[in-house]
Image (cartoon, rainbow, N blue to C red; front, top):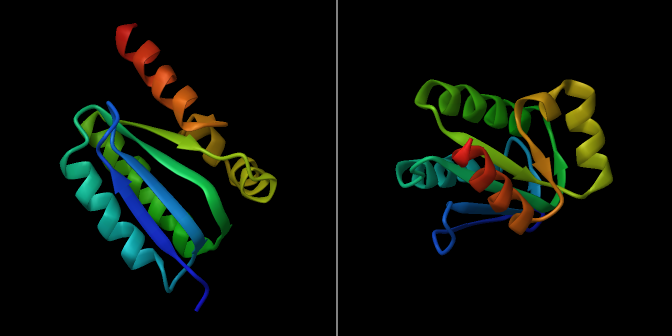
Length: 119
């Protein structure tokens, strides 16, 4: 199995989830568990950092769609961080870019959240 890791940090104003490796059918359960832990402490939202994610399959995309629907019901915002061209192209192709704002780095994502919160 390819190296896969999910780190959840609560050191910034929003919880940050960093996904490293391939998000697929074999790793999605670990990812989903980390999402649940972060959502329990999310407050107004969270940042999902996918800059170290090299691949995502339909199971990973399903996890993101469930995250989107859950956060919409709860009134939470999710900011994606992604600068890897293959993932960004997939997100644009399937319409994910319309569901989640995508930022090039964590700091920009957190700042965009602050701006949205003040509006």
